[in-house]
Image 1: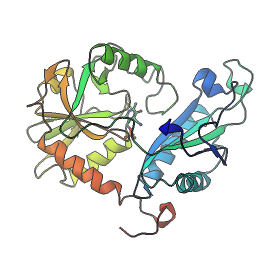
Image 2: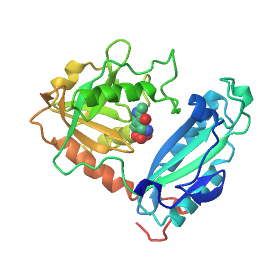
Image 3: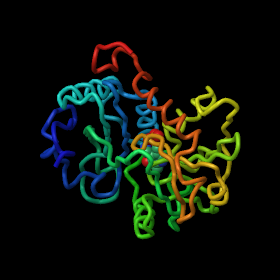
Image 4: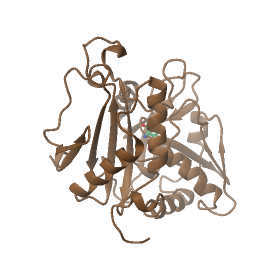
Amino acid sequence: AEYKRGFACVDGEFVPAATASVSIFDHSFLYGDGVFETIICRGGRLFALRPHLDRLWASCQYLQITPPYDQEQITAFITELAKRNELSDGYVRVVISRGEGYPVSDPRKALKPKLVISMQGAPAVTRPPGVGVKLAIASTRRTPPICLEPRVKSNNYLNHIVAKLEAIAAGADDAIMLDLEGNVAELPVANIFARHGDTLATPPSNGILAGITRETVLRLVAEGAAGPGLRVVQRVMTAYDLFTAAEVFIVGTGSGVAFVESIDGRRIGDGTMGPATERLMDAYTELLGRDGAEPDLQLTTKEA
Ligand code: PMP
């Protein structure tokens, strides 16, 4: 299959992705005891690599996993992997697992963290232009901080997957997950924004995975990229705020900036891409090719 082509990098060794493997005793396989990042690569440049690696480090810190390589080494592995796979555009996944150990849910049994890096040339989902995302509000709630800190990007996505199953069963593409109070949190792998008039709103960063794309969009709006006079606020939102919005869009490394066509079968706005979404989509696409353009991160030597 296409997603298995080329190489993967396992603990610094480059091996064919199709046969690369981790142990059946790996604690991430057994217990989800690991962390990860997905980074977009455009025109040979890794977008926001530093924030992604910093978030990976924070996730490791929280879980008391010592990264087996430093950030410079991981950067070198990613660069080499992209070169070997001859991909200047794609998605890089970096996983750090607690490692291999006796199969019991005791982290002290797995003492050698493992690094796995893989790369895909194409996104998981490609949507024809003009086609938006259909969302359904799931009954499965976003894990609250008292259960598992949502800012940690761990290999624990089961409730996100259950929410996604609900959305699929409802005939939608993806799920909106609420928090325990019933406020809007996020999607299984994306954050969400809604516009009313001159105000864009997105849920506050605690209680969700505060995405790097979300952060980028907040900055782009502040710079005027969503249109003159548009401001953005982080505030508690309910389904009402989404249903009544002029436009709703989702943001994430995998989805980019994508407009929402409907939620629970209700059309959002006029059901087409709104002006703020379109501007931000263009601004984000433009930024991908040039941000994080520190020379050592470049896979190619061409200048922006
Ligand atoms: N929320 C969750 C739960 C995610 O897994 C992701 C994808 N990493 C996002 C939001 C979007 O984050 P980012 O923009 O950093 O990809």
